[in-house]
Length: 230
Image 1 (cartoon, rainbow, N blue to C red):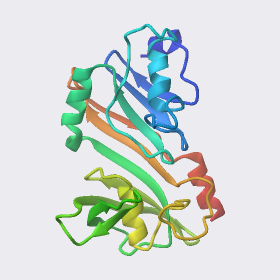
Image 2 (image 1 turned 120 degrees about the horizontal axis):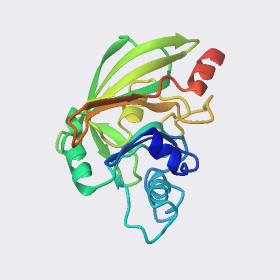
Image 3 (image 1 turned 90 degrees about the horizontal axis):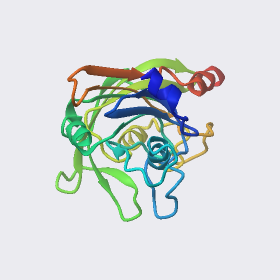
Image 4 (image 1 turned 180 degrees about the vertical axis):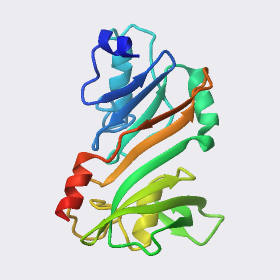
C-alpha cells in the first residue's frame, strides 16, 4: 500500500487512507461533490480519483467505480472500487457494512441514545421529509448516542441502519435538533461555516481477501474547535 502511494502522485484535495489493486478509501473534504452533476463534472471525488488511477493519461483504461456517496457538504470516509466485480460485491453486502457518522446538533437530546425510525419521502423541490404514509415514504432507521454536550450543542455518534438521502439531517431537524450549519433543514441562523456532519468510520469485508477492514478518521479538528467555542 505505502509503495503504491509513494509511486503515484496524490489527488489534489483528497487524502488517501488505503489503496490496493481492488479498492480506494479516501477522506472527502466538505464542499466537494462525490460524483458529477450537469453543472459540475470535474470538481468531484470521482473525477479526481479517475485522473489519479490513470496517472494523468486520458487513454488509460483504469477507472474507479462509485460504491456509495456523501452529500457535497458532508465530509468523511468514502469507499471506491477499482473494478465492476469489486463494486458489485461491496454494494451487494452494503447492509452488512457498518457506517459511523459524527454530527454536532443543536440543543441537548433526550434520551441520550436511541433509534429514530420514520418514513422518508422527497417532494418536487428535492426536500426530504418524514411522512406517516408507508406507501409514500421509505422506512429509515438511525441509531444515535450523545458523546459530548457543550453550551447548547451536542456531539452525536450516529449509525445508519438504512441509507436514504439526507436521512440524518432530516430526522434530527424534525426531532428539534438540526445539524449545525444545515442551511436546508435548520430554518434559522447558523453558527457554523460548514455542515457539521462527518462520516467518521467504515467497516466492511474485502471483496476478494474476505478480510474485515475498518477505517476511522477520529473527530475532525474543526468539530473539536466548534465544541470548544460553543
